Every structure is written in C-alpha cells, then in structure tokens.
Image (cartoon, rainbow, N blue to C red; front, side, top):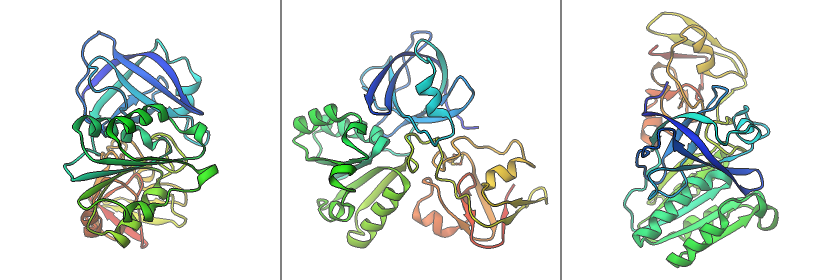
Length: 327
Ligand code: FES
C-alpha cells in the first residue's frame, strides 16, 4: 500500500457544490494542524467500508486546520462515491494519508488551465494560487451541464480578481471544449494543466502535440465519467487474454478477458503493492523484463512510456501474448 503520513480526521461538514457534487471538510480528531500542501495535491481517504479513494485538495491552503475535498456521485463507480454521498459521514472519523502531489505547478510564463467535470478540483487550487502570485492564467472548464459544474462562483471571483479569462462550457448548451483552439491560443511560454476524464486528456495531449508541440502539458486523470481518481474506468480491461510470467517466482499467470494484470497477479502474489488502482499513484509501478506494455497510467512520462521497462500494472496491459514482470 502507499506510503504517506497517516492521520485520523473527523468530517466537520458536508456541503452541496453542484448536482451530484458535495464537498467535505476534514479536521484532525486531536485538533492539531494538518500537513501543508501545494496545489495539485491529493489525499488518500480510507472510507468506513475500508474502500480507499483519492481526492484532490481544493480548500483554503491558508487554513492549517481544515482540508476540503469534493466528491462527485458516480452511479457506475465501484461504490466509494455512493458511500460518501449516502452515508452520514458528517461527525464520523476517517483515516487519511498524504497529502501527495503528482500534479504540481511548475514555473512557466503563463498557465492554461483545462478542467473537465470534477477535474476542476485541483484546477481550482491552481487558479487560486496563480491569482495570489499575480501570474498570467486562463481557464477552460467543461462539464455535462451548468448545474453539474462545481465551484463556479469562486472561479468567477478569481477571474475578476486576476482579470483572467474563464470560459465555462456546459456540454448540453455549448458542446465540448474546443481543445485545439485552446492550445493554439496559448501564449508563448505557457504551460497547460489539464484535469478531467481520459478522453479529454488524450484529446488535449494530441492537440498539443499536433499544433503546439513546444508547450509543456501536465495532466491528471479523473477517469471517464467519474468524479474521483479512485472510481475506476481507466484500467485496460483488455478484450483478449495474455500471459504474465513472474520472473522472481517463475510462476505464470493468465490475465483473462476483463481483468487487470494487478488483479491476476494478486492471486499468486497477495502482497503486491497497490493503492489507487487507477494508474495515477505510482504504487504498483513494476519493472518489465520482456514483452511490450500498453500504458494507461498518468504516472510515466512519454520517455518512460517509450522505454517500456516499467509499467503500472493496475491499468496497463500488453500488446502481445506474453509479458515478463520483475515480480
Ligand atoms: S495502484 Fe496506483 S498506479 Fe497502480
């Protein structure tokens, strides 16, 4: 399981943010200060059922006593978001780990923020931080409908404070975000930060490499149709079986249709490390000794993907009949 400072917290309050989206305020049960965090950071939350989910921090970084996370109800998810929405978490205690940050803001001449759905949570923290820094930023925010889009009033205030262009596009009225146009219009020296469903991020990266390959693109996946990293949709539940050879034990594992490598390997290596099962925490990173991995994670960069010698086995698969892993 993933590392990180473990803390007991109480849910102080839950707040409606948009259709299907609530935010939770968390404070330490002992009243102490919470660890500081940077925009883009997330915490791992152990729900009362034992389910582990990851939520971006989206509250006020200046408040050392409270974390805020937002959770989208995902009817087709694996139960974590329903548990948060349906159970009386307020007043209850949870264990959290972290914060960790795989999506940090890096120095750039300007920032183009692109949010899809609940992917707005880390983007909101970034907009707040960039406003405080007096940085040049702009935001494109797409969602299913206006009613489903969280944090619009706060984004509006930030836009006014920073004189930053914020384009809000509810898909039912305005269609999908015009990603190619957005990339084309990015100022010279800008970095693009995207967070949302896989299809949006794939299209964003493709648009950037097509029309502005010189721009840096940073992204964090919130899986298709889901609110939270941790509510799965990303794993490559490939349509054909293949074999995984575990080099350390010599065992062979069949990865059947519709299962992940991690699920198959866990049957013979029960203590194989993993956490998010969504390809973004890096816990299940495994050395590849043979075969060609197909990557579906958001941990490896393009160079690491091309090298093909490591992979996230919770979401990746293989393009041939056999894969050899250092397990
Ligand atoms: S378990 Fe998080 S990347 Fe695989």
